[in-house]
Image 1 (spheres, helix red, strand yellow):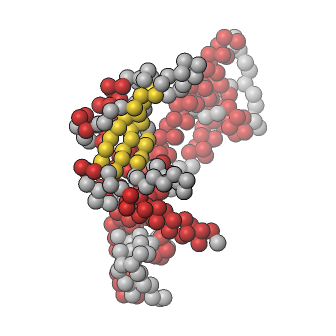
Image 2 (tube, helix red, strand yellow; image 1 turned 180 degrees about the horizontal axis):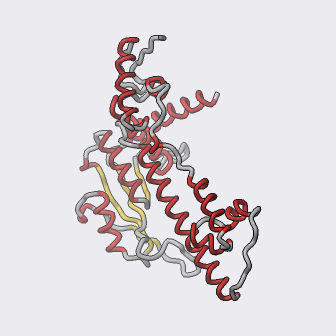
Image 3 (cartoon, helix red, strand yellow; image 1 turned 90 degrees about the vertical axis):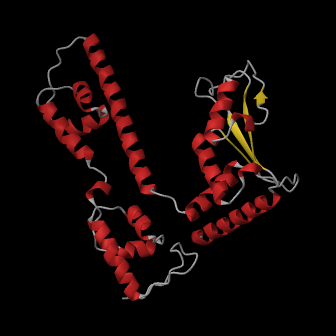
Amino acid sequence: MTEIRRRPGDGTGGLRTGTSTFESLRQQAITLRREGLSLRQIRDRLGVHNNNILNALVKGEPPPEWTKRPRAKDDLRAKARELRLKGMTYDEIQVELGCSKSSISLWVRDLPKPERIRTPEEAAAISRRGWERTLERREENRQKTKEAAADEVGRMSDRELFLVGVGLYWAEGQKSKSYARRERVIFVNSDAGMIQLYLAWLRLLDIEPERLQYRVMIHESANVVAAEHYWADQARVDHSRLQRTTLKKHNPKTVRKNVGEDYRGCLVIGVLDSAELYRRIEGWWTRMTVEADRRNA
């Protein structure tokens, strides 16, 4: 077997691994695989973050059934044909199964058509219920996909959080321009999840809490007080830590969609004395783009 060595910076914690160590890891990986763990879970359990090595460790071992995509449409097709043979219409099958009528048509078009004996009002009611069921099924599938995707992520390592945070800041944070040199770390976002990730990233960089400044930015027509308390809770700071809120003037001629109880404006997070940190972020991002270009070559 070809000897595999891992070096610092290759995602494997700096461990140098020869043939004997690889075999030991492989036995552990195979055991975990047979216990029903996913590649992501095995990676976290063994601390092996190099995908090539991870795939080599479990080579020949089939993935557990729970990680495979279910072939739900095969079952739906068989059920749709069964219902069609019982004399049900496309609308009635849609109500029963929650799939689209276009799919039902493809599945049962070779079967005999049932005799229609309902009024237009009854047909409209059935069609409406069928569409509602389709929307419910789509939402169920959407949630299942999101849950499965969340399981694929698993626990983030410090290095993963570090890289994600760099990309997050460069996408959403304030950038210095050659014509306006402002080397200060300022992050603005309206998504609570983005705020949580960004704050976790700052903690990873050992930025002292005392250096952080918080300010809400929101339209004046919104519930300002509720928004301030919401963002204070999200940042896990006392409301008194918030600076004076920036109010945006409301233009009555503008039709805004960001209204209602869910609208809470944005939270602005600034870091004091952050010129050096900003330069490091810019350096990290530059190296990441170089690595991306190397992979694209």
